[in-house]
Length: 345
Image (tube, rainbow, N blue to C red):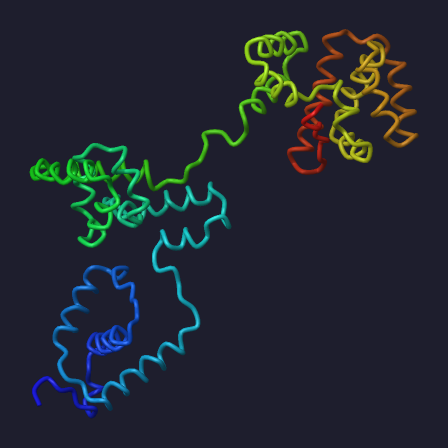
């Protein structure tokens, strides 16, 4: 009979014909197959193969189904299938900076066609492009997409926006190829990169780190100005500042010996001597350091403090800044953890 497939010829059937048989069987049984996720060329080939099918005898269908089941049982792992799918599968498991670097590498590997990254986006991910870009740019995007994906994207847009973009396609006929490449590069840069902030630290932390290393007079004047202009921001900066006077509250007792070995002996002696002479909070910080180191080291430092005598205010402040810098460096390196004040404080 014409069109009938003989069971004797199953081994000679192309894989695409066998795939069509399996798809037809699954569809007949009510299976919901996401065929739209296949590449457009694969969808077209599958449709042609389905159209070529006629009568299939039971033995042939059983043989093809068993072969399909056998191959399916041998599959131990399925991979994401594309770069974008791989990134989505790792969402939340790799850092944003790594995502950004990988996207840059992918863009470089894509060579002269930056559209590869753009076309990998899902219609939902492309929707912001259609909202922010001109109708002409969006019309070019639609023209670059496979027809089913373009239809899905158009269906996600509000009616008026979809009409504007559809009409704009009439104005894209004479656009030159190099302009298309530049448009793709712009879209890839703006919509396919990781959403990374320009700075990893808050503004309060950044200005606080700068003020940590400025003279006390300048620091106090700047902080007073910030508090008067924006009390919330100024208070955030105040909490981010870490000075010699903050040592008792921020540097835990067990961590004192860990930071002392990174401080120049001469700076430590001048810092302790000037702080002790000044009194108040600075003297309390000097006491905190001396009382939480070995007795032998503390006695040696006290002797050197006596020998150094009166320290010039500027020298004392520079030495205290050196001590604070060493403590902050140890915290940044993870050697110690500075105590964080409660929000209520």
